[in-house]
Length: 192
Image (cartoon, rainbow, N blue to C red; front, side):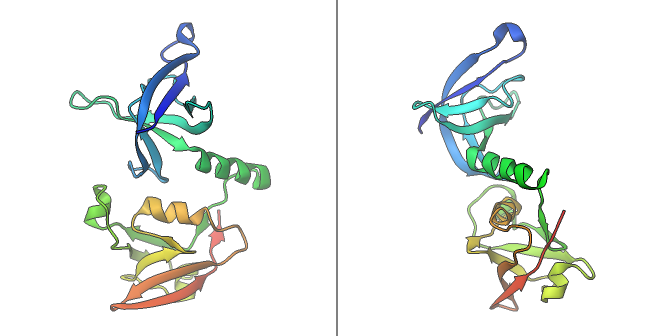
């Protein structure tokens, strides 16, 4: 419910340096994105994307990214949290690109996670790549990942957020469930 300002250049340069006020409606929102987002009702229009979302102290809290458009809904915009922006910038400074950990597995979310409901069901391993890091570590199709490096994982966005804690050359500590037994394994991912 904190007040924020979304700044940018909506529609054309004649409207540059526009600001709209709103509130934060949600944090860590999984809006079909690879990462968690900030939800706001501040107006985010074409041209505002890439502009700052700031609090009333003038501190950057996010980068305006997208909004839902429909005749049934109004005022649902999203910003990339500053923590994700810092992660991406750090990756570019260090490697010249974002290096993402890849364990060679595909995942399926629970029904609850796929529609945005709270859940603790974990992330189901749908398939494991032959010779990939997951297979080498002993993970199998049907295993349920619960935790990566101490971060709870219940959606694909949770998993991607957890991967931000893994630097190239580091192993991932994975907690998973197989046949109702909680197990732990270190996985040595590759980096793309």
